[in-house]
Amino acid sequence: MKMIEFALLALGAVLGAFLRYAIVSSPQTIGGMPINILAINIIGSFIIGLFSVIAIALNLNSNYTLFVGTGFCGAFTTMSSFALETSNLLDNNRLIIVALSILANVGLSLVAVISGKVIGEAIIAKVL
Image (cartoon, rainbow, N blue to C red):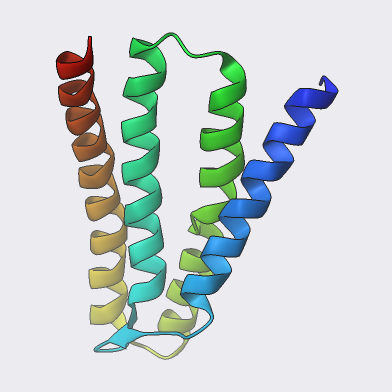
């Protein structure tokens, strides 16, 4: 790994981690489901979907993908936190909340990636 690649990865990761911390530092729930984690997963999924289309359309250097996709989104999104929160809910026999949380995180994150890609394609179509 070249020094510039390492620096871009690290900078993206630091920014993603700080933003993630800012969002999860005051836990919010709806009916016991941690919505901070859900929001982060949806936002991160949207960003990576949008960026993937823009990066391809503009033929961006792989350093941009390293910064945004691997660094920022990798540190920002929260699969491990989601898994821990889900495990904690299972420990407390909150089975309905577990099912809703899994469906919401996976389903809405997938919708966010697709939405990001569709919006990215629309932006590219207008710009190019």
